Length: 113
Length: 111
Image (cartoon, rainbow over all chains, first blue to last red):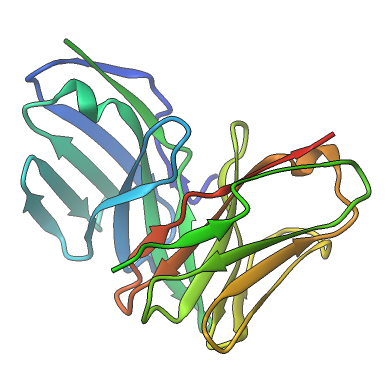
């Protein structure tokens, strides 16, 4: 089992709709979670992070964390064609003093005009 | 504030050669991590340095090594290159909250 799992997609969403990206993790010791956006040929760009159960909103983006279900999600409201990219979920944990940031494989999102 | 910089951006080497990649973190960031990204394996962690010490290491062979200097700049070295080492190598520097900011990457092609 991979430590961080994401549906690779592609996920197609019409412009203006809500895009929902999901991520599950296996390490219950994971302390915080990060969402990155990566455009083709570019490096990952941090969108937001979350470490408490519940929702965290930043503009059109909302991250949701449910530690009991070991589930993290990212909602993108009013999706724009410029949101078309691969979205990477990452979990952060400390094991025996070693910090570890583990990335999922990423979900490719396409926003259709 | 300037972002993470990586040099060179593109590199072509042949099998058996060695290569050194460089990364300059965001000013004030003391942690630098290195990743390998390939279409098949995704983003895989190589190692992390903090205050000139390797703090964490991924599951890569000993051909992959790194170091960090007193100014937090980091280098990674790959010896005896193999075709499978062709990848995008990303460096990221971290805040105290473990938010990692990536550089543009070095695209390595091994022929």
